[in-house]
Amino acid sequence: MRVTRASLPGWRHVYSGKVRDLYEPEDGDGVVLVVASDRISAFDFVLETPIPDKGIVLTQLTLWWFEQLTVPNHVVSLDVPDAVRGRAMVCRRLEMFPVECVARGYLTGSGLAEYRETGSVCGVPLPDGLVDGSRLPEPIFTPATKAAVGEHDENVDLDTVARMIGAEDAARLRDLTLEVYSRAERLTRERGVILADTKLEFGRDPDSGQIVLGDEVLTPDSSRFWPADSWEPGGPQPSFDKQFVRDWLTSSGWDRHGDAPPPPLPDDVVERTRARYLEAYERLTGAPLTLP
Image (cartoon, rainbow, N blue to C red):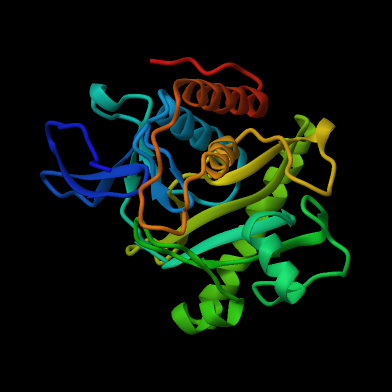
């Protein structure tokens, strides 16, 4: 799809990802403006149809989570241009690790597919007899390599990550990822929500050398959230995330392994997805989202 982005006085656009647009100040003072758009991706494709207010939900929920966590994060300021207020953060510029740091407490998605083939996920052996939605004996670190837009992330084991970035940093990323997951899983459970899995990104502060949590955290884009009162292993679970979009695409007849782009989302799918994002924010934070 063609990516549209805001023109922001004083800021120069430098990059657009699947969902976020990055800007640097024209005076180049070592920070970056991270703007969450309303774009939505599924199966590593950016869809043609945006979800209204999605970027605001992602940013505000990320900021709420940063307040709940003890791991250092990249936010410097919320003094952002009015055109992107509510959906943007001024952040430290980090040297990002080329690894998607995934923690899983439940078995589903690509982890389930790998388990069915090998009995393990990313080199971590798991007990026999697990099914879609099973709770794991303990959370596991299942990293993936980052893929460009339109390409697919690839699950890898910890040894592969160690060869990429060094054993010490690989172990630190694993420990930080599981620390964030464990803290978040306890908080979501108190709110009647299961955090099945989540994807994090970390970078190194070039000045201090500190490993810092970046990008978004624990949002419906980066995590699977399930209602705890309806959890029943053995099949797909109801969710507060973009699984609704994935399910519609799967049922639409679109071949995600072919050459054709994803079809546009119908209005009812857009509205129901927007409602799920807003509901996720309210369920997790305990308050409805105030839109700018």
